[in-house]
Image (cartoon, rainbow, N blue to C red; front, side, top):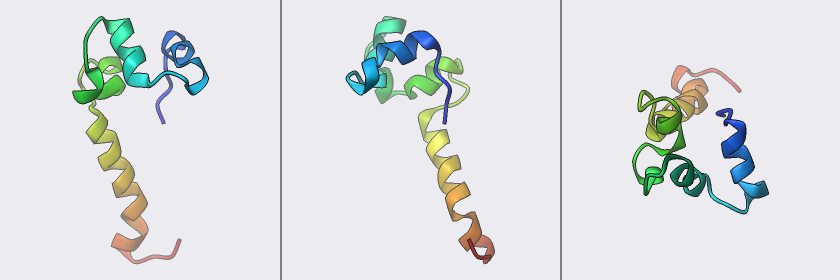
Length: 70
Protein backbone atom coordinates (compact mmCIF):
# COMPACT_ATOMS: atom_id res chain seq x y z
CA UNK A 1 0.00 0.00 0.00
CA UNK A 2 1.18 3.51 -0.79
CA UNK A 3 -0.01 6.61 1.04
CA UNK A 4 -1.07 9.23 -1.46
CA UNK A 5 -0.68 12.97 -1.08
CA UNK A 6 -4.02 14.50 -0.17
CA UNK A 7 -4.26 16.26 -3.55
CA UNK A 8 -4.04 12.89 -5.37
CA UNK A 9 -6.44 11.21 -2.95
CA UNK A 10 -9.05 13.93 -3.34
CA UNK A 11 -8.67 13.75 -7.14
CA UNK A 12 -9.87 10.14 -7.08
CA UNK A 13 -13.35 11.40 -6.16
CA UNK A 14 -14.18 8.33 -4.15
CA UNK A 15 -13.13 5.91 -6.88
CA UNK A 16 -14.81 7.68 -9.78
CA UNK A 17 -11.48 8.74 -11.34
CA UNK A 18 -8.49 6.46 -11.96
CA UNK A 19 -5.20 7.17 -10.24
CA UNK A 20 -3.43 7.36 -13.63
CA UNK A 21 -5.78 10.13 -14.72
CA UNK A 22 -5.21 12.05 -11.50
CA UNK A 23 -1.45 11.63 -11.83
CA UNK A 24 -1.56 12.92 -15.42
CA UNK A 25 -3.55 15.98 -14.36
CA UNK A 26 -1.26 16.81 -11.45
CA UNK A 27 1.99 16.30 -13.37
CA UNK A 28 0.79 17.72 -16.68
CA UNK A 29 2.18 14.60 -18.36
CA UNK A 30 0.35 12.04 -20.47
CA UNK A 31 0.04 8.27 -19.88
CA UNK A 32 2.02 8.16 -16.64
CA UNK A 33 0.29 4.87 -15.91
CA UNK A 34 1.94 3.32 -18.97
CA UNK A 35 5.37 4.17 -17.60
CA UNK A 36 6.09 3.76 -13.91
CA UNK A 37 2.70 4.73 -12.57
CA UNK A 38 1.93 7.04 -9.68
CA UNK A 39 4.61 5.41 -7.52
CA UNK A 40 7.27 6.42 -10.06
CA UNK A 41 6.04 10.01 -9.95
CA UNK A 42 5.95 10.01 -6.15
CA UNK A 43 9.41 8.43 -5.82
CA UNK A 44 11.11 10.42 -8.60
CA UNK A 45 11.39 7.19 -10.66
CA UNK A 46 13.27 5.35 -7.92
CA UNK A 47 10.40 2.85 -7.58
CA UNK A 48 8.25 1.66 -10.47
CA UNK A 49 4.84 0.04 -10.31
CA UNK A 50 6.33 -3.26 -11.50
CA UNK A 51 8.67 -3.19 -8.48
CA UNK A 52 5.68 -3.08 -6.13
CA UNK A 53 4.01 -6.04 -7.83
CA UNK A 54 7.27 -7.99 -7.79
CA UNK A 55 7.74 -7.40 -4.06
CA UNK A 56 4.11 -8.27 -3.27
CA UNK A 57 4.37 -11.52 -5.22
CA UNK A 58 7.59 -12.48 -3.45
CA UNK A 59 5.96 -11.85 -0.09
CA UNK A 60 2.87 -13.85 -1.02
CA UNK A 61 4.92 -16.85 -2.18
CA UNK A 62 7.44 -16.88 0.69
CA UNK A 63 5.62 -19.53 2.77
CA UNK A 64 5.56 -21.97 -0.15
CA UNK A 65 9.10 -21.22 -1.29
CA UNK A 66 10.44 -21.96 2.20
CA UNK A 67 8.01 -24.80 2.93
CA UNK A 68 6.22 -23.57 6.02
CA UNK A 69 2.53 -23.43 6.73
CA UNK A 70 0.47 -20.29 6.52
